[in-house]
Amino acid sequence: MKKIKVNKNKYTVIMVVNIMVVIFIWYLLSDVFKVFRNGMLPGPVDIVKTFIYKLTNTAPGGNTLGGHIAASMIVVVTGYIIGVGVGLPVGILMAWYKPIDYLVRPVFDFLRCIPGLAWIPVITVWLGIDLKAKAMIIFISVFVGIVVNVYSGIKQTDEVKIWVAQIFGASRWEVLKRVALPSALPYIFTGLKVSLGMAWLGIIAAELLAAQSGLGYMIMVARNFGRADLVIVGMLTIGLIGAFLTWIIELIEKKFVKGRR
Image 1 (spheres, rainbow, N blue to C red):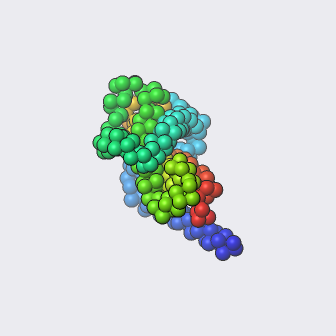
Image 2 (image 1 turned 45 degrees about the vertical axis):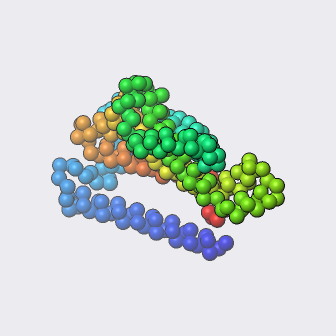
Image 3 (image 1 turned 90 degrees about the horizontal axis):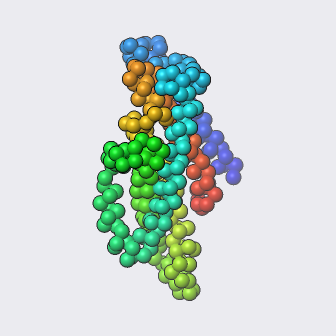
């Protein structure tokens, strides 16, 4: 147990040092050597100042940073939950029951080849630019990622384990519940993390095209005003939120997936 703790501490130290090195190089390039002209790459000090300013000020964009974060989070969480809630059973049914697989997979394979971002113009025409439209864009991106990973996880279940369970009298449902699903958990959690990134990609793209608030909208307004510092603040905020949510999923994963400690 002590060895695991030491390795974890070493990893944390290395991660912090790497981040500090990147920030220091960034500072040298932007503030000391001024490699980038006309404020194309503001330094870390300017970014911190802009971040603090945007916490309490609405200009530009008509909302504070917290307001934009809340607007994006509502859409992302709504679309993500619905996408996971629908994608999980669909992926399980496709992988475990051949008639459903034969019926659904051809249509799914066709639709999943269409990028989620390609649906944005169509969905905005159908549903406008409010919550349900942006949540639908998130749903499509998340749904595809979840189904693909759940399907792969169920399909890779060891046939010997299935055969042993059947020998002991387990029904098909019991084999799914006690053998296939536990075996597929690493794939399922991978799908949850991958789909989370796809959800943020979808919401930012949707807000760049049609929105009145949100981090993507803030970045678009900052770009129109030539505010590179505010664009970077938006990008860093998205990265931090995404990393935090991924960390939460990994904590849950450690509780349910053996060997992830």
